[in-house]
Length: 128
Image (cartoon, rainbow, N blue to C red):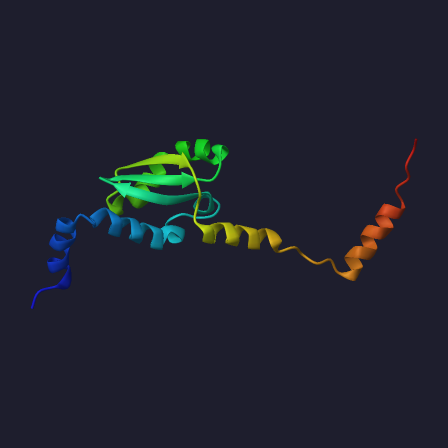
């Protein structure tokens, strides 16, 4: 009996889908590879010949991530990534909804906290 990977690896190479499979693995592991907030502002878009193209959601993050380029490559080198390139683009739709959900979580004030605020504000006087 032969191991399945010994049979599949040559077939995958021959079909030319090796980069696509690696990209799918990177996407599957993305949130375990990178922590918040970085993982929410960049997302893998394409992989070709060892170069990973990452979509970034803003120019500010694009500049910040350029400083982290070497650290990013180290984390994903085991997937066959040798270099990364950034571009402004859409990140995963799941990320956007998760970020919105995090922002939507607003703490409700207790009645004691509201009373304290009302008393503090009542003592403020305005001068014209």
